[in-house]
Amino acid sequence: MSAPYHPDPVPTTGTFDALPSPILVRGLSIVLPAHDEVEALADVVGEALRVGSLCAATLEVVIVDDGSRDGTAELADALAGADPRVRVVRHPVNRGYGAALRSGFEQAHHEWIFYTDADGQFDLGELPTLLAMLGRYDVVTGYRAARRDGQLRSAFGAAFTGAVNHLLGVHVRDVNCAFKVYPKRLFDGLTLTANGALIDAEMLSAARSAGLRVGELPVTHRPRVTGRQSGARVDVIGRAILELASLLLRQASGRRTRETTLATPLR
Image 1 (cartoon, rainbow, N blue to C red):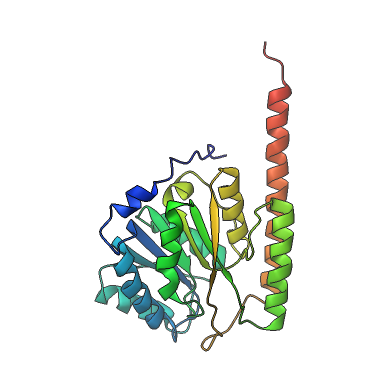
Image 2: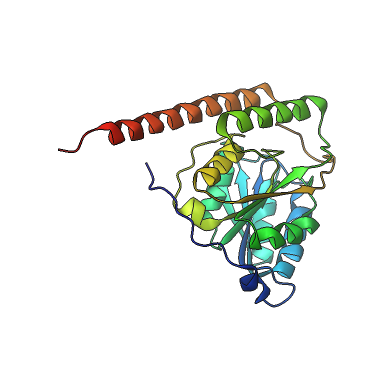
C-alpha cells in the first residue's frame, strides 16, 4: 500500500498573483484520453494548445490513444510531430477510460494536471476560470450545469454520482464530469486501480482522504456531434459498479487493518 499523501501547503493567492498576467500556473499538463475520436481530436488539441498557452508558463498536451481503430493513433502522431508540446501515449488495445487516464498521469511532467475528453463536448475556453480557483482550492472540478447526453447516460450519471457521494463521501455535484485539475503530487504518492469510469470517484475519494480542498464550478457541455458514446453501454456501467464494489471492499479492509494495528498492545 502506498504511503499516505500529505499535501504541501497550498500556494497563496499572492503566489499566483506573482505570475505574469494572464498566466495562472507555472506548469500544466493537459491529458486527453481518446478512443476512436479521429473526427474531433485535432480541434480539441488545437483548442488545448491555444487556451493552455495563455494561462500556463509551460504547457504539454498528452494524448492517450486507447486502442483506437479509426485513425486516431495516426492523427495523434501527426499532431505530435507538428508541435513539440504534444506527446502521445499508446495502448495497443482498448483498456478503458480509467486506464487511459492513469497512463496519461504517469507520463505528465508538470505540477498541475488537467484532463478532459477528446470528443469536443467541453469548452476549453473555460479552463482559465477553473485554474483561477487554485488559489483557494487544491482540486477543482467542473459540473455540467446542463448535461447534453442521452437520457440513459444522464440518468446513470446522476444515480452514480448519488451513490458515490453516499458511499465514498466525496460530495460533488457531478462525479464523472471530465473537466478537472489536480496537483501532480497527489498522483506521485498514490496507486490508482480503476480501469473504467470509476477513476473519477477513486481520485476524488483519494483527494478527500488526503484532506485536499475541492472546489466546483459549472461548465458548458455540448452535444456530441462526432464519434460514438460509450458511457451508456451495459459493459461500461457494469464495470463501474464492480469497480466501486472493489474499492469499497479495499477501503473497508484498510480500515480493519488500521483498527487491528491500533488495538494491538505494545510489548
